[in-house]
Image 1: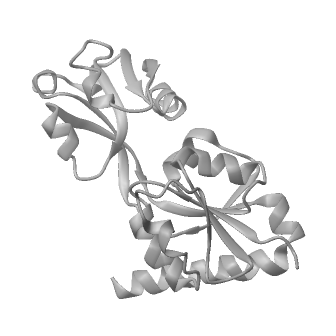
Image 2 (image 1 turned 60 degrees about the vertical axis):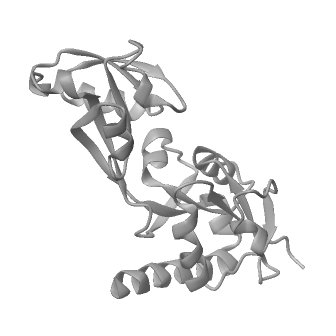
Length: 222
């Protein structure tokens, strides 16, 4: 029997929305997969030819790009940041909606005009997206790389502004920040390792088609 297809799924915000998508695509994980307290990383499904791994969002793209997993579910923010040539993103799954935004303290925003910026110091886990965005506007961006707790950076003077994912905006508000620019809208994508898609087309092709149909069904039902 050939090795099972490995599908990488991110921990965190996308996971709960990915479960119904997996079910519609005909993949049902073992119960431990949806248990946030489980420390396991690899999981069986009701299909002997498919297994799941549950990893950090940024790591999903790395596992798939290097062929350790053949498929993955990941936010388009990750694809924008890393631009892996080894990845093919054939399906917008229509889940995990949020946005990448620039935010700053509310007191500063009251008198600030982003059109007048010439240099910004920004805390973010998206330095490449941030630099590209500001370079396109002719603004020099000095990026301070953080992996979390972005919202505290302006309060402690680490950076005046942040670039981060925003969904409801509640975290920004609770930390005295407001959005001043939207860089990009984000949704989750199905990604495929290009080499694997060529060598295992008979297996991966139907899976991609299944996810495409599942995404359309969920859009039609919305």
